[in-house]
Structures are given as structure tokens and as C-alpha cells.
Length: 285
Image (cartoon, rainbow, N blue to C red; front, side, top):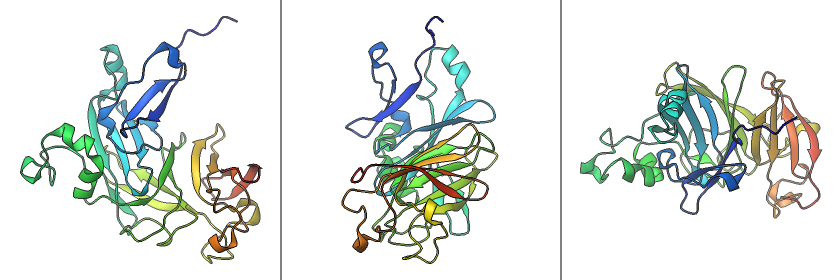
């Protein structure tokens, strides 16, 4: 069978300046390109989807304690952008998530001249906002999260899942089962009918050990901490991997003595049941 001539699937990496730099799997065939429209912050991942009218959607989290969740929506259908020789990642609107305690949320836009992002309030232009995405999110009252990691979009119903690794607590937020959150959790939301409309969210999976947290309903085979990797399988299962830090593994004083090594797990999005499929070697973080 002859080798495929299709382009290698894109991957993403974060530049030293915090910008997102999608690169092809075969890096010898291209060069990294900054996608400033996606915002400058610690991109933990980039999960791509599309709107009903064919515009690209990219979800990305800021990998730090108290980091924000962002959504980029392209200005035009991605197929037409490609046909014109333009990248669908260069023109669009960047939004940031604001979660409410009643299970609703909004996506205020990081757009110059709107709301708190005006010249009179110290924002020079749109480039200034994108390069200072965290400060712009602050100005819009976005919700700080517990170290956002990878994001996955369900191919079945479009629900979006984000792994939140852990937090020392202390920042004001609506999302999460507890303030100090050493074990992390997975949050899920359903988008509204319009790209800038609101959403509804819930905590899909609180991680941890029922011996230390009565709100944890995970069985022994599904206990986990510090969820990081997320991806959907062809049968609709949500695959996840953990990233417990080496200095916390198995430590009783960190409430990790019953959580085992870092692992690969599968979750049923309908029931929340979790099963451990494979474990890493001792000490692997």
C-alpha cells in the first residue's frame, strides 16, 4: 500500500512566551507558527471542535493554580478559510469562562472596546489584550480554576470535559467540590445554541479518597487523583490519565496513601463509573 500523501495531523506546543504554537507531527515538513489569536498563557492543551455553521472552536486551559479556561471561535467556516489560503486559527474571537454557583456560566469576549477592555481603562488595542490574556480575564471577572489540564469534546453529544489537576485553594471560585483541592476533579459543561451564549456545567467526577473525603463515591478500582489527560474513545468512553506529583505519591500526610500509582483509567460519561486499566511504575509522575 503506498504511503499516504495527506498532511500529518497537527499537534500543539506552548512557546516559552506562553503563546500556542501548533506544529505538524512531522516537524521537518513545516515550521512552528504562533497563533496569537488563541491568547498568550500556559496552554495546557488545545481541544478542537466546530460550530453548527462550520467555524473552528478551540478550548484551552491556563496550566496554573487559579488559571482560566478559554474558548476561541473562528470568524468564518474553517473550510472556506483554508480554501482562501488562510488559517482558521488566525481570525476570530477569544472568550474566557465565567462559572456561576447555580450551574450556569457565560463566555465574555476578550474584545477591545467592550466592557472593561477599553483604551480609557489601559488597553491599547486587541493585540494588547491577547498578549495579556490573564489580565484581561481578570478584568472581565472570569473564574479561577484548579490547574486546568486537558480538555475533551464528546463526539456523541458535544459535552465538553476539562481535567482540573489540584489546587492549594484560597482563590475565589465557583467551580469545585472543596476549597483546598489536593486531588482535583473533572468538570463538564453543555454549550448554548450560540458561540457566545452561556453554558450549563456540573462536576462530572470529584477525585480523591473516601477515607479522607465523605463526598467521594469512587470504588477502590476507580480511585484517582490529579486528573490530567482526557480523550474520548470510539465507543464513547472517556479515557483519562493522572499526574500525581512524585512528592505526593503514596504519602499519608498528603492523603494519597490509598490512591496507588499514576494510572490510565476509563469513565462512563452516563453513569460516572470509573475503572483503572493500567498503572505506572512506582515513582513515575
